[in-house]
Length: 202
Image 1: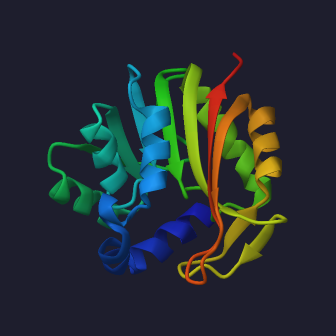
Image 2: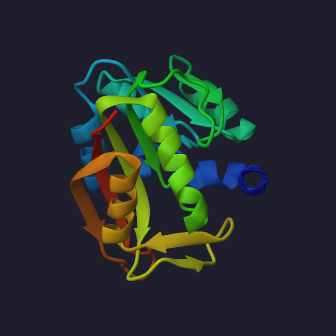
């Protein structure tokens, strides 16, 4: 039910979201480099979960990655198909991926978990670990903060995380952090960070 509310909230602002964020040129260069560093150059499929307008999926494909974008907002998937007709995009939800166990080489979840309450995060990370192959890579984008706390995001309530605490959640789910990127807020943007982690057990 909560994810359905998230879907409805993004569907209601899809055109504006696409206008503001829908190209890779609007993604910070350090973030694109971080994503490419951890997800390019590996065989197998990479899922861009919560792909939105499909711009980062397209960026990954430009690096030679077999990337598929998945989002639960039909308006985003329609735009992704139109803007990137050679790409692979489909409707789906982060909590039930519908792919075989250990069949995915990597996952990008770029701000795809920010609307999940802390008690829901572990279940989604377990689903990621179910589908990702041993030694596969997970890359996440998050809002950084000194404590786990909700705040009024422009679309709907979101959460910020201390990176050490989120990294511990990843460890419990069967991942090991290998790199993090943090960028302080600048007055117009909130503190941001990214974590790359490797699947480490069964």
